[in-house]
Image 1 (cartoon, rainbow, N blue to C red):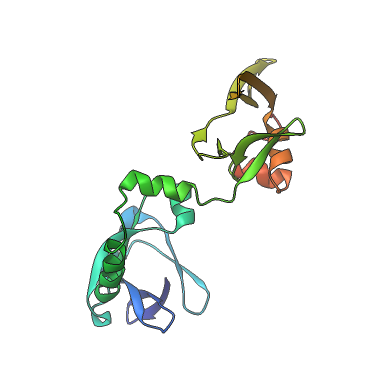
Image 2 (image 1 turned 135 degrees about the horizontal axis):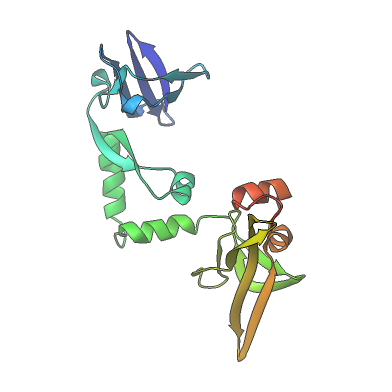
Length: 217
C-alpha cells in the first residue's frame, strides 16, 4: 500500500500486475483531533518517502472514486508468523469474489487455527545441532523447534533467574529429552551454543531474533 495526497486527505492504494486497484484506503482530514488515539501513523508515499501523520486523519474506509470495496481481515505470512492477528483492508469486490470462488473450489475449507499452524510452518527450517551432533528436530530463525518428520512443535528452551551479588540475571539453557527407538536421550546444553551451531546467522542476529538476554546465555 502506497499513499498520495489528494486535496486535504491521504489516499492509499495497492495494485495488481496490470495496474488495477485491489486495495484502497482513505484517510480523511477532520477539524477535531486524536484519531487512532493520538498514535503516529507512518505512510509509505508513492514517491518512496515516508510521511508521519497523527491526530487529524481518520480512517474512512475505501476511497469512493475507486469503486466498490469490501472490508476484510488479512495479513502477510511474515506478519502472521510474528503475531497471529489480522489487519483490516478494503479489497476490490470483484477481486475478492474471484479469490473466494477459487478458494471454495478446493477440496476443503481450513479453519482459523489450521491456518495459523500452516503459517507457522512456512519458515525455513534447519537441522538442530547439539554438541556437534544432529538430532531429529528442526529449528527456525526465531529458535522455535519442531519434530523433523511431523513438524509438531516442541519446547527445549529453559530460562532461569540466578542471583549474583544481590543482582538477578537471566540465563537460557537448551534442556530437552526424547526417545530414540527404545533409548531415552537427555540433553542439557548452552542454548546460544546450540543456536550458533544450528542457524546460519551472526551471534548478534541470533540474540535479536531469539530474544535472548545479552551475553548471559
